[in-house]
Length: 247
Length: 269
View 1 (cartoon, rainbow over the protein chains, first blue to last red):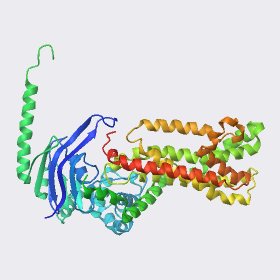
View 2 (cartoon, rainbow over the protein chains, first blue to last red):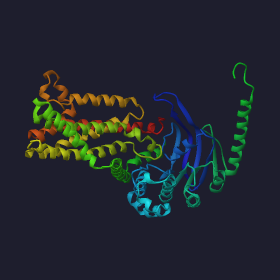
View 3 (cartoon, rainbow over the protein chains, first blue to last red):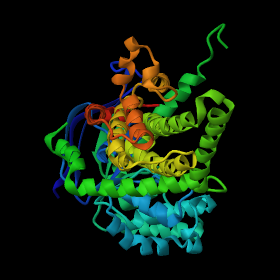
View 4 (cartoon, rainbow over the protein chains, first blue to last red):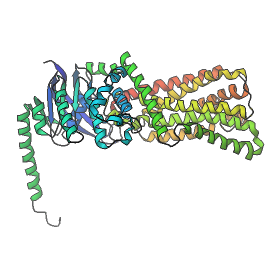
């Protein structure tokens, strides 16, 4: 498999204040990683480990502060269930707007509108303003849009499965189909069974560094062991008797 | 940044992409106008009523209450205010446009300059409605148009260029230096008082006349008054001057936006 994106010693940092040369937070520290065409990669790590920054880097939304990125892939989009939605527009108009924002041509969007409408099962609501939707209906619209209009590379950083029980089942299976349709998929999921069954490789991030790359099973096992031990350390530290005078 | 990634970014402006951004621009302008109309009971009618009420108040105050100035002054003020409102509201909205859409830029790759352009299109559309009202109101107030009024589109074009340039220029910095927004507001307030909306250029002392002569906003207003009220063709030198200021500001603005765009998505607000 050829390489779709290669990261070589990549650093990303965020400014903490307004000053141009002020303090920065280094979210990724010297990451090196290759993502191959058609592979399904799981990204795991605790909160603040740099997962979201890595995804945004993959989706080409941010520019690295140091290091080298090489790209050889088509459109890449982060799965977003409500990108640019406006409450006063109808479901149909929101699908068009969101599709245009994601870089699809109007012709392509128009050709998929019927499929989005069917998939969403919104019925008459599809042509009513979004503000009349329940939150479940809104999520269904967003999910249907994401399933019908999709890029070459899919980056997923969201809770999966939306709507009521029946739609959840349907959306889960649609997503599984999509994931297995030959796309390159990068997935952040705290749902371990789902990641296990969908992904064929995993990268484990901690403190902005790559702790390991390997099979999904192995990475999850290492991550859990590490997580348990750091929690144990934290717990034993907080179990220490308080110092005198500091209660 | 690597070569190929750089090519990717430049690719944001290739022909196909440009057409898509144009489609997006069109749809967003429609969506913004529709959203605004949906927020009130009377909807689109407010685009007519609001300026109409505003103009009627001015007509009453300056045409009747303030006896001396006469009706000619009300027409003079109308034209000045309509042009000024177009410039002021569009530029002020532009200053917030990128900043208000930072959440969008964090989720999808778009050229940030798109957001001021959307604002300019929606505000200019609303201006055209107001202009229509003005063109209906002026004859009612006793102004008789001459053939020179046909110059109006040409007289307004440099103003549009000025708005376009200034809009891009003011949109660039507020996302990374929010203080700039306060400066822009102050400059706009100052401009309101030195652009001859309320007085004629010849009513100010000779030694301060340059404030009006070099002020592009004053020249925009004067051009509109020339063709609508005075029956005179617009002054081509001042049209050219306004247009070139617009182009210079626009280029500076675009360059700044392109330079700062990597920062926009990283700035934590």
